Amino acid sequence: SRSVSLLSPLSSFPQMAERTGSVKQQLANLVKSSIQATFPGLSDVKPQVAVSAKFGDYQCNNAMGLWSRIKGSGTEFKNPNSVGQGLARNLPQSEIIESTSVAGPGFVNINLSNDWISKRIKDMLVDGIQTWAPILLVKRAVVDFSSPNIAKEMHVGNLRSTIIGDTLARMFEFSAVDVLRRNHVGDWGTQFGMLIEYLFEQFPNWEDVGNQAIGDLQEFYKASKKRFDDDASFKERAQRAVVKLQGGEVKHRAAWKKICEISRSEFDLVYKRLNVHLEEKGESFYNPYIPDTMKELTDKGLIEESEGARVIFLEGFNIPLIVVKKDGGYNYASTDLAALKYRLQVEQAEWIIYITDVGQQQHFDMVFSAARKAGWLPQPEEKKFPRVSHVGFGLVLGSDGKRFRTRSSEVVRLVELLDEAKARSKDELIQRLKKNGTISDWTDGELEQTAEAVGYGAVKYADLKNNRLTNYVFSFDQMLKNQGNTAVYLEYAHARICSIVRRSNRDIDTIKKTGTITLNYPDERALAFHLIQFAEVVEEACNNLLSNVLCEYLYNLSEMFNQFYTNCRVIDSPEETSRLLLCEATATVMRKCFELLGINPVFKL
Ligand code: ARG
Image (cartoon, rainbow, N blue to C red):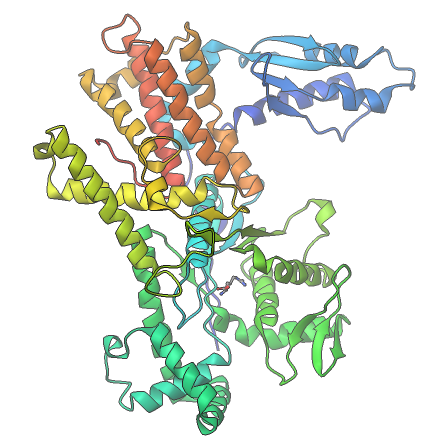
């Protein structure tokens, strides 16, 4: 029997410093009060607040929608503009807002108070960036990511899933959500009969030989597959081995475990380099839960017989979801149904997020649809929790525009890929330091760490900055450029800000507490305004499961900083203290962005 993992109660989650919610959220609350005061009869209106492209800082866009609901009902309001006027008038008194104006068909432009912006930034510097974490609607989420298949090499698709999943998990964790980081490894299924039988045959003393001796599992897989295809008696033995494994035969279980262990230690090499933490609950974990799950679905009348298999017919799909194969065995879908039920009912997750290539979209749509039919999940239009989401992503392409491959093997070996990124970034770093004569300032350890941060960071960032659905071309030359929207450029930008603060010779921890921020110049104001949008950007990235939103924010932040630094002298200016605080706040927000993207910041470059 399997033990159910004990979950820590939600209350034991580390206490966060007080969060106020994003600026947008705070304004939405004010707008909500105003709508209530202006239209006491309408209780279901959602406040619409957005950053303004032109006038003011933010804009409230509720007037037109409200007008279309009230016009002709004998209202005192004459047109959308007068609705906007009413909304502006009824905004509660708040230190956040400096002024409002109403434009055209009732858009309420909202200008933020400079004093309030300065204070928000100062408070963050003193109390920590976690006070800027957004407030989300869920308390516990499962992120199902990476999830390679045992005995097969992890491929670039698994790498994308690992990178994207880790970032989403990090953003949720920052937002005080309890995240179950699930590695749903493919460790079960009929291929194990073949692998076990081949292990017995090739390594009669397999229990004693080291993992090294068994060697490359991908080769092992290929060889056993060949044996399986070529030799009928081997095939028969392999099929019997599956039955024994599933029946719990000790020797077969042990062999299966050994194969899983070898695979796992290979995957771990990648996770270690990427600094990604996962908790494995592979397909085999859910196997004991499948019969009950199938019974429930059968009792609810969802499962029927079709061409010898057992299937669920679902509206909107032209094929049924097969849950029991013709040979009576369970499959990927039955496992996912049992896993979903477990995650909802045992783990009590409110949001379950699956990260795979878009090719698996239909599989997940069907599993989700079956779960709704079983009553485990609300209908999607109810927009309620618990919620499930499939986060699909596109292909990684080589420079030839075809699926990414290396010369030596069919699939790229991820460890080699990451090592190459690091080696290239180290070469470049050393060359540059030699050229500008500063290499003697660097220890070997520093070179190594910096090369690693920049190299791995470049691989991650190149992936995360794209809209995940688009295919992207993997190119070391592109991702390691120190110009444009790359991790290298951003690392430089961050290191430069740190060096400005260092060169000032001021004690930044003291001026954080004693100094004030003034925003008298447009470039100071623009930078500060961008800084305080951090929380809502993370909020949006979480709610829409999009990491590129955060990358875009980070890139724009560094551009805004450049603009500020070009036009506003920092050191030895009358505004030195205030401007150093803006530098420090920028570096702090950049570091948090790096951290959320799984990239290590560097402090000198
Ligand atoms: N092992 C699968 C693959 O490599 C991904 C598993 C995704 N997660 C899930 N619950 N189905 O394609």
